[in-house]
Image 1 (cartoon, rainbow, N blue to C red):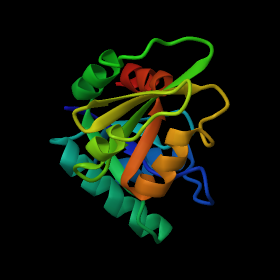
Image 2: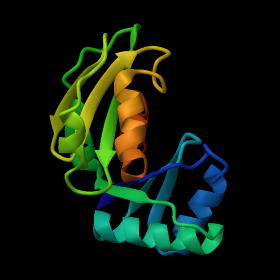
Image 3: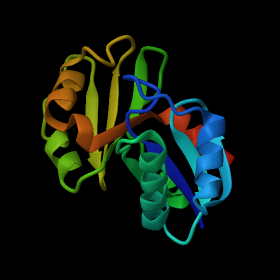
Length: 169
């Protein structure tokens, strides 16, 4: 099965994982048909299950970089359903995001937060769909609450990036 791997916190904050290195590392760890997407910690692999792919990737990354890098593994078909379910309109004034929980229950907790002016949030199964005014990704009320309450327990991707991940599958 094709599995998307979304690495949390790489290529920001001092941990650089180059696409070529990530491709080689995942292939050497036994994951098949590895493709990386952009320089933002995204890959698509062939594996028996999403959970196995994520565990394998995390172990290989920790061995290589000497620290835990959390990885969300999700079947590409499931990722497509999440993107298709994005409930907010996409326009030039907003940035469309999906916030993926890395620990059960975080999405529900985040969906209960109040969005700021111009923001929209909606819960899905294990995700929060979020739209925020352009230029406020780090400063909006929801972004600040996200940083405070769930920083290391989620990984966030732009919906446009997720479409590229799906296309790479």
